[in-house]
Length: 268
Picture 1 (tube, one colour):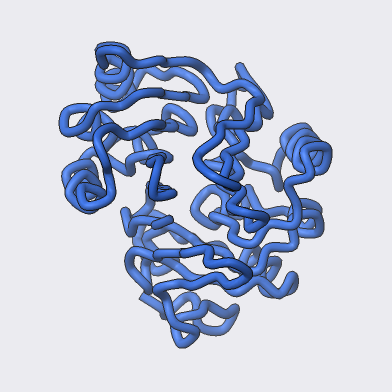
Picture 2 (cartoon, helix red, strand yellow; picture 1 turned 120 degrees about the vertical axis):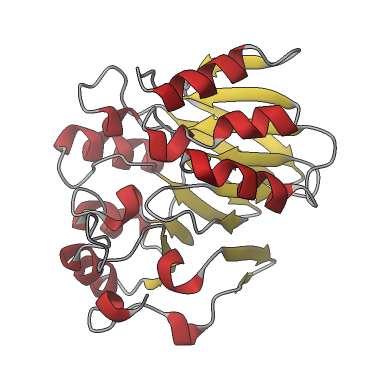
């Protein structure tokens, strides 16, 4: 799988060899680049596109994906009024011979020993972030968690539901955690990290020196490091590729690019 460097946005591509899944598409300007990057891996159609929630930095580039590829299934977390969401929604709804639905709890088979669990944590929240589709890739026992922008540190309801569903579905520990909400202080609570005990964390953000966004947040970095997570940031490493090979986890980002509490602010 690959976490694309799409600045303060998110896009995660999963390729099992048989099946392709795209979770979010970054901002509008990222769509063309993502489409080009996945072309080598897509065999026929993209089986699943998942729009975690309606914010532009997650759905903005997805309309380009529907323009360039056939998409068999679309799963979305909520709806919104932005131009970017409407363009995504219209493209998905107009996709021929394709299923489109809101997220529900389900396990999607992706290949031999490989599945994607969809966890419907919350619907209808006034805080759009908390309607995010939660997904866990399980590849022969190795697991990757994507929480979109769900604010598990700020919302006890989100935190408790997420922890409960991960536990009841046996989806822990987590090997690779796509750090929630771009490393914002609203996510990645101690309570969640205590449960998922991730080996690696990947933060998709501009970096803390950006004039408008300051992610990852120092408190989040301290929580991750305290939980012995090896953290990479797309703002330093670029696209980060992860491969599950038996008991090994191969990654494109070298250990020299690991983020620490001391260096994360100057890592861009």
